[in-house]
Length: 129
Image 1 (cartoon, helix red, strand yellow):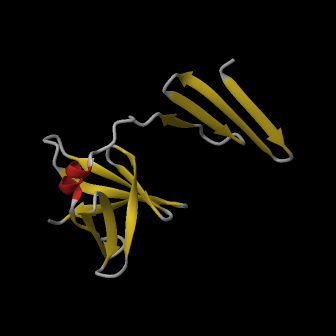
Image 2 (tube, helix red, strand yellow):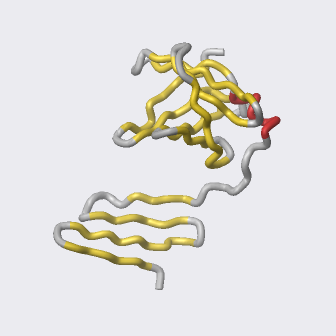
């Protein structure tokens, strides 16, 4: 069958396979969430250079510096610490509690990055260089 179902006490979860690459998660009568499979193509270390640069968020008043070093991406904030980023998809990376999704314009240039974290989604950082 195409569904997994579980409930207990005050919670209920239904996971429905929509296609081989899409699933829907229904929880406690909340709006459903659709998940799409990420492409398995990962960037090669040489392709990481296109993501290097400074990214600024006016909302957070913070600037992240993304650097490609030793075949991986690293993120630092306002000139402070650096954390390694693990590849999670073609333009998606994870480091510590953060998930980063690089967004491209119609010509394929990186225009910014969305930062995600528990209870924080789509915090936008514009590429400033």
